[in-house]
Length: 271
Image (cartoon, rainbow, N blue to C red):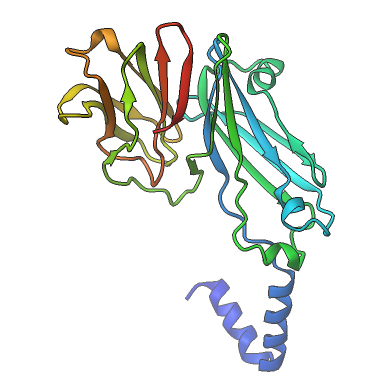
């Protein structure tokens, strides 16, 4: 028996039951909100594409009558999973933020072409009962990507930075990629786990199911990989493609699918 457990047992044996019940009620009343792990998505800052975070103080909108200032925690990791920057700021009642990742990293002298950004948001007074009635609190945000050609894409988060994340099974995208005028398919893949993960990304002929290209990558813990398939390198170019993965690093950690066209514009979405 551990000393800590032995001490708890001794306390329980001498404290009246009604006192213990009152203590449990009080502890429940003052317990903080139930926070989900930080939400994450991939950023791109490669000199051509810039990334922006779209964040709002959602507590304000879910309970408008309760004035809620919140604490915003943002963390940036490079492509091999190293933390390169941490930020903690206040976000006011009804406030929204649209931070430019490129500007943030440049101002702090950080060079990282792509990686993971995590976001956590919690009220300044997290023990108020109104927040607990909201259930699990998850700092859902959106990522916006803009390149020099003026292409803009908006993608929601793919996963959470949860220590309990574990590899999932094989994945076949529901999206069909039309290859007319297509120059390349670029997949941005993250590994939101604390262990390495090896996986194979494949392009299939959407009509026949035949594999036309594949690449294998080994991602570091909390790392990110950029996997590019140039259409000119394919053994033959079908009219429509599908993306498959041998195994997901964690549940819903699907890659971002970027379609690059001959004129330089792109279109990006979850795969």
